Length: 640
Ligand code: XCC
Ligand code: SF4
Image 1 (cartoon, rainbow, N blue to C red):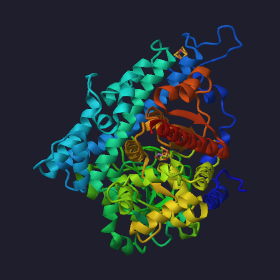
Image 2 (cartoon, helix red, strand yellow):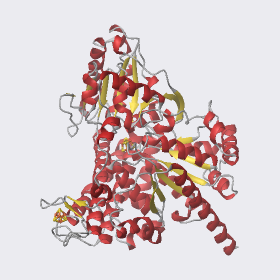
Image 3 (cartoon, rainbow, N blue to C red):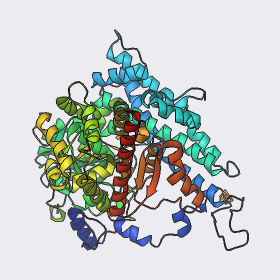
């Protein structure tokens, strides 16, 4: 067992190296933060006004409430929903940037972007009610982008968010309407929630949580339009074969990592690099090598087959190889410490967004109007940096694993179509109804160094696969499986139970792909979790079930970001049992904790549970799937 909290061998080697050169990584900093403050850890520390921080101190007279009189349940509820607000703001702002780019592209203002996937454009247009008959692609794209932008500024509370309304099943929509969590505008809902949780405002925990759920639904709305519009601009993922882990960084090449979330930049870097291999050669390298970290890495993996270097917790370790020439970052999940890591080497950290700068790093304002030229200039920075690389400091772990990825929902349905041409989604429905597979689990979320990096991601996936659960994956969780060599056909043979193996054998025989399908379908970045929900919606319709009756569970073993909280919350509102592998800061209020882990089920059919132990979490996830299956069988019997 390694002295470090990671299961990744390549990461261990780089942590040794960091130790040698005296660089303190996030693993050291996580240790330094222990023991955590119990108040913060359980959610009963309030810093919403300047009289705070107020903590709940039940033993002191007057100490069981904050200075203003806020009880534990108010404090915990407010803190929780403010996480959701942060997450929804990040996801939806990402979506808004894509929408603006699509609009300006359709208006002919951005020469370097174009409508790439016309089929997707038509599909989205039809779904959201944009006229397609006899119109050209740019005119339709303009209306689709405008509809996306309209999601943000709408202030008429009688209206509803277009994407939510167009994709969610009627039953689910009606639950949201009845519980008043159906949002009208993203900006309005975010502002309202911050208002609602201001000092001296709402102190009713249930009302606060419902305000939070409304914003969580804005989160999926923003995610969903980000996915749809990114597919339109850059193409919808198709199966790709590539590799993952730090060995994807190549000693003889100019290495550039794209890191962050927004594909507007990373896609352009990939495109530009194709034409610049000669410039890299002129500098003495054999070419340019691109690798991805975090979700922008997932975006270019899905669409371009770019290799995965590593995931969130180990991003500094990509720099530790000494062979990373530039790390080009956009927004979210980029550790400020990258700059100090880069100082140990020749690496250039290039920030590109006006809202994501790191003191001391190189800021290059990415300009969509001259996107290609911007991308080229950024690549030239990397080529320059390469010239300054100290070969004596290079040590790249010789570890990579085969990855089969690129499973947009469209790509999955295309494969199912080979088995059942008339009704592709039936392929999963049949497998569930016959008991061949127990259901579906979405493996999602971040890394969180409160636990051991990637350990629970992989352990839970293996246990679920052994029990014949079909796996979907996204975000840093997908990257954990890819890094560990579990995202390929060999892993199916190694880990899947007999039923799941049979299911895969049928798909493989029909797929027409040159490679076997992987143990989990990597559906993309975190904004792409909307793809998973659309799959569940289709399955519910096909099986004649409510969403909350589908044998589907969600697991975020290492949830970390505010975005993860928002994602968890909309999953619950959609009817999905949602496992979180860290103890959530809701436990400081029994009431709030009960609302999100128990009462939520009565209202939405979905609920949270916290379980840091992988074996216990897997057992519970399997129980939930079995119980849903059993109930469905009983329902059917009662009907027949
Ligand atoms: Fe960030 Fe998306 Fe979490 Fe990874 S999974 S740590 S949010 S990069 Ni999205
Ligand atoms: Fe304390 Fe109330 Fe201010 Fe929170 S809002 S910091 S509980 S006084």
